[in-house]
Length: 81
Image 1 (spheres, rainbow, N blue to C red):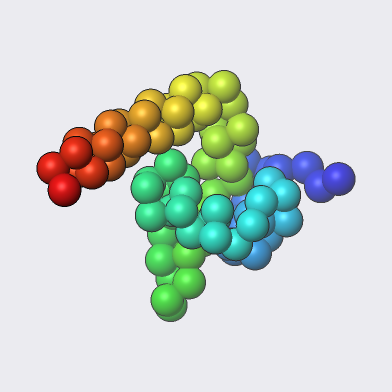
Image 2 (spheres, rainbow, N blue to C red):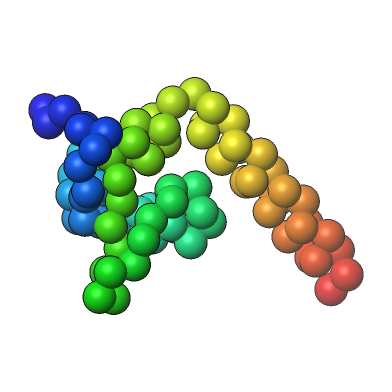
């Protein structure tokens, strides 16, 4: 298993293999700004310290809260149909 270096820059495919998640999950994390990244030449680059932050317990709480807000929003929208 590879160790995440906080000062290294990773591509999305490297993020995918380090965190053992799918490509779509990486995209979703970037889109929802749960992982901060910079776009360089049309490709995202992620700092190692961001990856270390994402595996911390705080990010899990934030992800759950984001999911719950989205779930409530969808429920309200469905009610109006």
